[in-house]
Length: 256
Image (cartoon, rainbow, N blue to C red; front, top):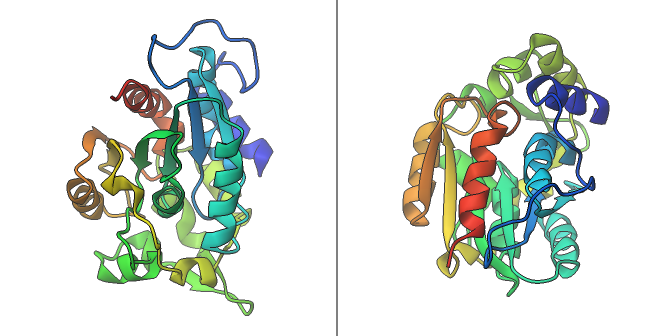
């Protein structure tokens, strides 16, 4: 799966650098120097690679969190471990399910701003399950089903069109067949902290999203009083529209 996502990144951002390569620039003075990226369900941390490449090239210290996707507590712990390694102000970013994770983990004093990308933004006591039930239903949410172990998957026949309609078909098909499941325990766990109450917030609304409905995204963004940016893309906009997403993260890095 890592290889196919990196192939997608290469296709859309030819010539960009990888995380960890030499910086060719420096972030603005006073801006957060650190960016921590939290991925969503069904994919791994390399879904953030195109955005990470852009930000690394501009001099930011970028960390990709590897969520186990076994429970909310486990993903929050992985994120907190990443935050513990940061030196100074940090922008915490979540895609899709990652929005639930950053909502819980984002109260860390190092976190200077939160960025939600096509992401769920629960309040205290809300879970991904309760937000999904509240709707509106989408092609993607209707296609989520548990296996015998209680792990949740998106129907592979629907995955490409619902999640990655603007990626090449062969990449969407491969992602569909290489999904990382989200355990139902994570799906049902309510958050006990809603960090967006106390942090500057930003939201990237993906207007052609068939997984998290654009109407729901707008509702989340309004509730958390986020600065919003619309991107005409699918749920995979963090790959296809990586430049626009990175620009929003840079704006968050400059937030006071």
